[in-house]
Image (cartoon, rainbow, N blue to C red; front, side):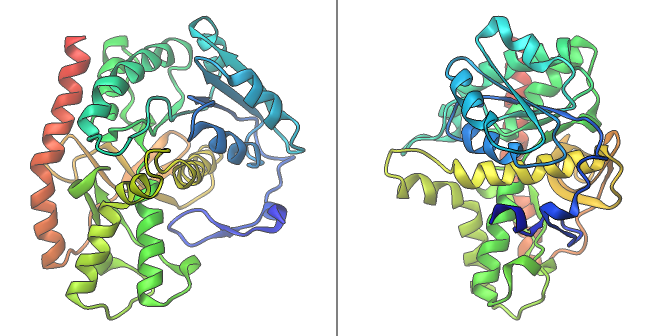
Length: 341
């Protein structure tokens, strides 16, 4: 069943099936997952094991990874799997990685704000990025650990201090916002979700998430109230899952899926596949903020081009102005943390 599942992997609308890959001719690529034994890390490890572009899958966490690695390694796909646990094995896990995905940290629990998360996850991200700078400075880094609006600036500062920063190689993974926007839009517009494209810009928390439904395709004549409701649901998607799980976790499965989609796009870009476009939170001059999520063309060096916002509706223009102060504050908070600690 899994072998024939068609996946739409980028906003270009290209469909790929497992049979569509010539994995024998795909270059060797090592992918490291930091936080691989966690709620996002385990399903993400499974999904990356299914990706035929991966030749080596390196799974790292503070504990529990040998078991996850043993389990995943039995799956009959291309990649060789290794598990690493504890600080002393982090270097080995990272050495030679082409793509590093970071879902490490604590998940959001009911009543927790992204600020509460910040205090724990900021330190974790800082130490992991210090190791990346040392052991695989040229890897593409996919940041999943929340709050992404702050953890990406933290990573940038760590890499700058180490002298390894390349803004083309650092990405905040906002793909889940896109996945949700597509799903919710398709349901409301009554169109095939596989055909839907919705750019999502801004940041990756609450009102900083701005889905551009005016640019959504296929076009649908949705009213202002419907667009407003879809926007709010996309912004509150994480909270919807946290509340539904009633203290038993956050959006781990859909996040793992989104993380796998974005990592796949990065691998395709590295391998020279043309016109791979995904939304991501990157260093940007699209607005006056130093980091911003928008459509990005991926290539052999990571970011090939950061694409502009395109035409916005009045509602989206208001949303853009409303999100800027909060996003600016989150970015500054990350930079301050990196420089003070």
